[in-house]
Amino acid sequence: MPSPVSADRPAAQPPGRGSVEALITQARRLKGDVDAVRRDTRSDGADPQERWQRALYDLALHQLDDLDTHLAQLRDGPAPAPAEPAAPPAPRPAPADMPRGSLLSRVGSAEWNLLTDEADWSGELYQILGLDPAGPALTLDELPSLVLEDDRPTLTAMVTDCLVDAKPIDGEFRVARPDGSVRTVHMMGEPVLGADGGTTSMWAVLRDVSELRRSQRTVCETRDSLHHHRRQEQTEHRIAAELQEAVLPPWRGSLRLPHQGQVALDLAAHRLTAATTAPLGGDWYDALELSDGQTLLSVGDLTGQGVAVASGMAMLLGAVRGMAMAGSEPGQLLTLLNQLLDTTVQPALGSAVCCRYRPETRTLVWAQAGHPAPLLFRDGTGRMLNTPDGVLLGASSGAVYGQSAVTLRPGDLLLLHTDGLLSGHGRTAAVDRLLGLAPRFDAARTAQDGVRTVVEEFGGEGREDDACVLVAKVTA
Image 1 (cartoon, rainbow, N blue to C red):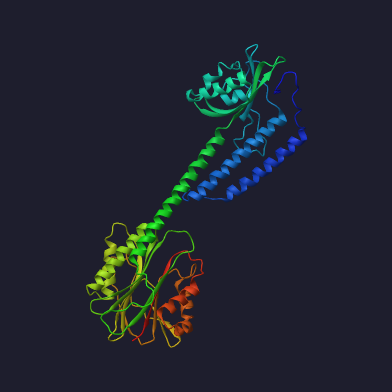
Image 2 (spheres, rainbow, N blue to C red; image 1 turned 30 degrees about the horizontal axis):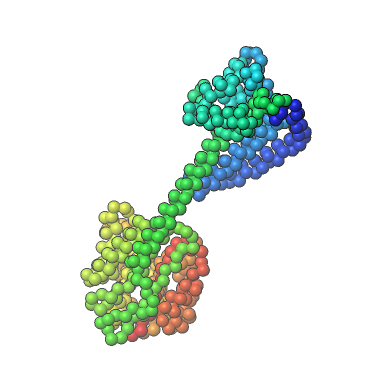
């Protein structure tokens, strides 16, 4: 249908069929490329980022599908409205390479003659509005009867501005089809002026944008969900970090025991954070002077991430300190800790090493629960301490934990660590790499030098989890 701005000025000639065909080919090729990338983006719906990306791909496909449809109609021209109330015409088949659901009925056209009060609709417009193509086209006064009540003022304002002030029409409204479905229609049009400058008719192109708007809403909803998820993650990360900072001792240099005239152990520790933005884990390190003059050393890891795990770690660390102050030996302490985990409301698994150092005999008594054994470095060599029996905390309600003892010497360096130092590798790889640092640990004058060696060796790794290291150097 021609769409002149003025009745005495002919409309511009449409582009040649060959140029439109080339545009259709380009649009379909781009659509195929986007669809291929979309299929490669598999998502189970759990990750808000992936849901948002998927929604954007779907929106792009809807827009390209509409572009394909519009170009096809430009090439083929509008389908004429049927003149006889015969059997409804069969819908025009979509091209073979057009995706399912792409119908050429998405765009229709209409012209309303103000002098004769007649309306002329294309066949596609009947399909968009769900009306019988054998029926008469609705006049401008009748058209609002299809529009939802809330959107009628919008349509009235657009038509009034066009007819009275000769303003172009460009807006959307929702229509209620006879089958009960609601469609969103985008309407663009202009007045047709007569020789005297008065408006004689109005033409418009109406496009069904329901699927496009639905995809846009999905993108907005998934984007908002993603932003909410990120804010929640940031809040949880901040709370977990603050909780860890409040619980874990931020050592720098030696931990001096006030009841001894000479420092027995030089202690230092460090947390190596994950390279990813994942929530903080449940790793901990600790040292505590006990009432009998002995020193408690411990490292551990509670499975999971986030605030709940950080609070669980704080609970376990408090229990470790309390039981150690009450005199529990390492094996008994882990047995009680396992019972504590077994009675918690939220089941959890954890690993730990607990040591008591007796400075008067330089004896280290220790136990482990599914955790890497401490490493002892002496005279330029390193070895793993003989590991007593012990399963993961929370794995067995009746588990009993053994303990071992080793006598240390002045100058010895003891290293305790949690898993996560070496991402993508088992414990053996991390231990072998630590033992290979024996000459550097032998040259370390302080515990802080030992920690610095570990950080230099492992700090640049792309870890997927946090890791803790605790170094104790025997000084007397």
